[in-house]
Image 1: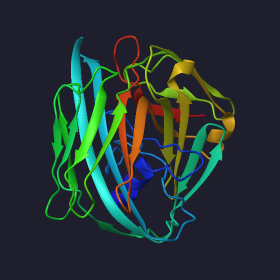
Image 2: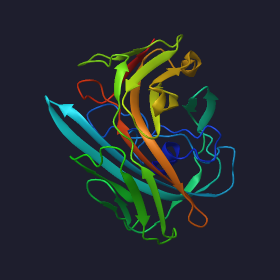
Image 3: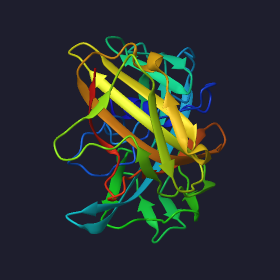
Image 4: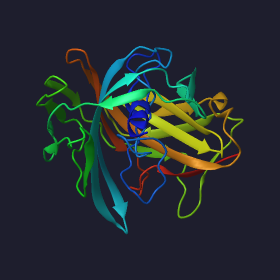
Length: 298
């Protein structure tokens, strides 16, 4: 289900909510809620094409993540990038979604996934940051994620994706890189403790700093039969957010995960295709630790 997760991660262009939950964190030792480009988390977002649309769709997603975190008392840079291009035919009956205020709420359970076929856009070049990232398709037309121990940008740079073209025609898409923001409330959990989320009350957050794009507050939890997620999006310039209590109405009273990050997105439209490029950076606390980890929903 690599591509299905990728679609959940990257596409909301055709929905009214235009939200997605692509996780910023590249730290594999922390819990990851959504999908960053094909793997569970590791980044996620809400579907770009409506689940009510049974027609074929040619969709692509490209992600770039740049973080700078404090590890063992010192700064450490992290980055990750990846992509997919797929033809989707049919309705995804595994996932139901609804909008609650600034949030897209998704429940994943039993059902049938749409049929999908991978395509290639040739080599992709992501430039404008500290270094150029090249993503090359495999013989199976998949793009393996690329990662490293450096930050790709500081914020405000113009990032460009140039696709050489193959099955998908050549295209170029640009955006302004988001900047790292610092969360001032709530206090992020330290050590083995969890972030406490009261399901019957709004969840409020504040931050400092300036960035292009949006702030995403992402939460998820899973039972043996279903997975639940809330992807809540706010303008980064507001410096505050409030997730309504109704966003957690379907969540079970148990542990899950959270992931807070800034993101910027742009869409390219090569003939016959809708392709979204997303760049994201983790929100951090005052110590520089990324705002991602375990949550307890009470």
